[in-house]
Length: 314
Image (cartoon, rainbow, N blue to C red):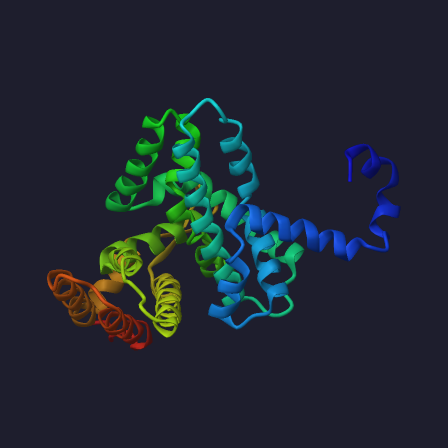
């Protein structure tokens, strides 16, 4: 409804006899316009959820990540930058929205409570968005900077280019927020551990390689999606294992616990398993073409790494 009507008749509009239909129409239009007409069917097929739950997870992702701000910023550049740059940036956002939607569907109870989800995840995601460049390992940060530079060369303002360039990393924010919950540790510290372990073990390479696997059948596509989401879950589980076993010390500057060499400490205690995992991934890298069977094998190795009890201290 127009803003003036909302201001003058808000309570009555909320009781509109077609309120459910109006909301459903608005959300449907948003999904079709932003992520395409096949989005709901494809996500429902991959997760087994009803279309209504997919829509709730979509709205939760859209609002928790504040992607409407990005859409508005991109559309404000109409006739100022090449249309190809705008399309490319919207594709980056689309990948973020799809991954976020899948995450909330896989990790939240039913029915999904949009308001509660935004309250639970929104602030942490926003804080990570501000801190992403500072907490990424060198290789991952270089990739984000390269994406930002590509958009900046397309005449996109530097600030917006950097925000879009960091979206691939920011997509992991729900896992990081979840790992930080209940722990008196700054969320950027948790994020630093999350990204460091991904870089150290080669999980970032696995995720990137999985995107290049051609799923030739319906079942292969479902298996590929399931394994990729499982890998992200393993990375979160590893993060919590590392944090809980770290040498935590109070940091007066932040007023919270800081993690000192946590990944190094964990890697040393589990040296044999870590080296075996890295060796397997090195072998997969050198094998050439990467396929679904290789991804499944790598996922099994990572799962064993998470499940393995910590080695006894010397």
